[in-house]
Image (cartoon, rainbow, N blue to C red; front, side, top):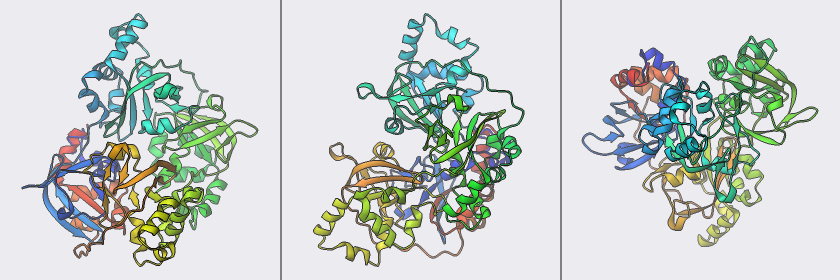
Length: 577
């Protein structure tokens, strides 16, 4: 993989910002021995994309051969494979799409922007708004210009940046956002609004013809027109980057958090960001709010990076560019609401000092650490989900998995409505009291939780043979669409994609029945120890470099498709190292 990823050495590969995403693409939630893996089935990885398993001699996972299956650990199982697995990048999607050849040519001409859309971009996720060839033809005719003239423009890089959203921004998210929400682009001052005139999704007034073309490092939305970027505005002069500026302002807790979350290099780089920066007192208050004992334990949280990213917007937006009553998408993927006033506010936080400029962005000092509603919070605010809330709270420590005390793990709760539970109790001649007293109540709840943030759009796009893992040790679910209605395990999804800060809630019209648990073979080593024992030295070094060692030494269960040392060596070139 060193070669395949364009790296110079294993050391440079291990320093990549996207190393965690690449590794997670090799991992399934839950413990699945080879006997539990179904041939011809696509399995959702911890990273969110899928890998295809095929049994044979040898069995394969995508292009990789399974050299040694069923290497059990105390907290999962390893299947040794011959390759580092990479899905198509955004550039790869363009190259495979004949109707996107013009935007591919434009992107490749625009300086180093093509690198932003392939695997050489250090792991940043993007969403490309890609005008089709027909859209470009209409644009050239209407503007009396040509492809050659566009390629020769001095501002070609800004033109392309205005067609790129930072992060993986699905059409479902755009459709669910208020039409006043400003979606940031990579253009320094360029934002877009999403509207639906006549039921057609548009961005910046341009229709989205084909949404959600999936890539390994983001998404492509095919557009029926070309976007026109605004003229850039120059910010006030500055001499310090965002990290230096925060330190100069005495925001010591924020600086420590940025360093602990591995985001220091991001905010010292050339990309522009807007940071809503909590004060030291705000971090002190967050220690209690997040159930921590001290600032040190808060800084050690697995979800620290997600919390910090919820305070960051892509691009440089001074207070004059922030529109009151507008929801802005954060680097974490959720939104914050800005309201101007005396003082201005961001959600519940007051903006104490705006417009503190750095060379690579701007800081607005705020009075609070911002947290969206957790899954438990969504349940507590939903009268039709009071029964599942009671069940979750009775099921041992599982309620902690669904609030902010879960060390940052993302989950998707499949939540039967109160009406669904009433029908279930009648059909099964039981009661809520009997359910709450069941010895296997924890397994019952775990079967209603998917690991990760699993959108209905992803479930609908998956093949109906795809097995979606739950937190139940051996419980998987398939998603089907009989009569156009999304179902999970045969149960209809009545209301999908209720957003929470630490995942999603899908409201179900029925109750799922979990399978009986199966005990895995005995094991004595955790996954990291097992990988080391197997001589997978590059994988172990990568896990340590990506900060995932504690994750795979812990009590949560994982299935790892483990690339060989030779596979990592081949990835250096592939990743441009």
